[in-house]
Each structure stands twice: as C-alpha cells, then as structure tokens.
Image (cartoon, rainbow, N blue to C red; front, side, top):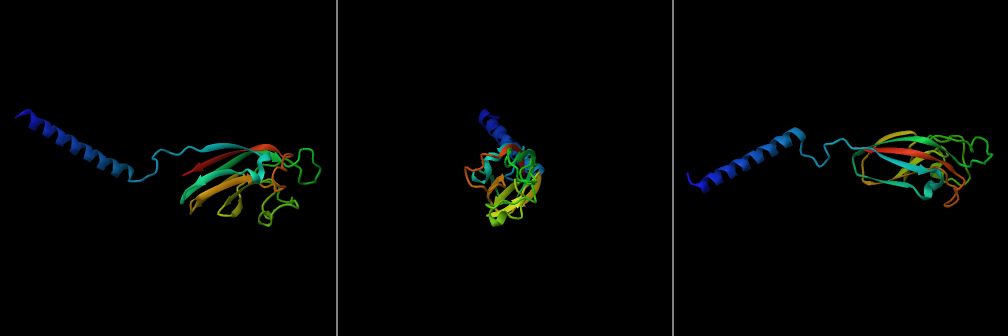
Length: 166
C-alpha cells in the first residue's frame, strides 16, 4: 500500500470519528445555545441614597427565570421623627407609610421596599422574588422612595441583591 493511500484512510477515519463524537455530544447534551454549566448568581450592593433616579438595571432575555434574594436594611431618614416611617426596614419595606410625593403606581407598594419595574409595570421584589419574564427588556431595581432625584441624601443603609438568571 502506498503512503498516500494510507494517509487518506487515516484522514477518513479521523473525520468519521469526529463526526461520531459530535453526534454523541448532541444526543447527550442536547442542541441548545444555553450554557450547560449552572449559571452563577450576580451580587450587587445597592445603597438607599440611589433611589429611583439611579436604578440597578439588569438586562433580561425572554423566557428566562429570574430569582432575586435581598438582605440588608435601609431607612429613609436616620434623624427623622415621622412615626411608622422613619424606621429601619428590610427589602419588604414599610406597608403603612405613604409619602406625599409618591407616584400613584407605587401607592400599593411598601415604602422603602426594593421594587422592580419591567415593561413600565412596577412590582414588589422585597426579600425574595421569582418570575419568568416572557419578553426581553431591562429590569430596573430601586428603593421605593420618590422624594425627588438628588433629594434622597437623607436615606441610609444598603441592600445586598443576589440575582440568578436561568
């Protein structure tokens, strides 16, 4: 057998083996654009002084499940004396407190809570939130304190926000 035909046979065998490995990989792992490795959550520190004027923006793709957990605490005015409002709270906020400047869409959401906005709809994120988004867009997270931009410097505290997108 001449060396060139031996090379062709070996090359053909390599092509066939590579094709078989590809087929077996597709069968075992599926044909998908998703990463087979479990996604890692992202962790963000969100200071209460940022408020709605400087939201944390997270890009979401359609049909992705988002899980958010939040720890930490915030206060609207550490030197304030408004009963039932100027108190430390977790991300679930203070349900009975309403400030005069709040926008109507937020009236039913607890004051100083971690809230989200997606597709111009507001909702409570709080300490624990899970949702599968059906469309692509930006999820905006912020503290529900609408005293006006650059007017939240009396806020104090930080939320630690962990976001897992699957």
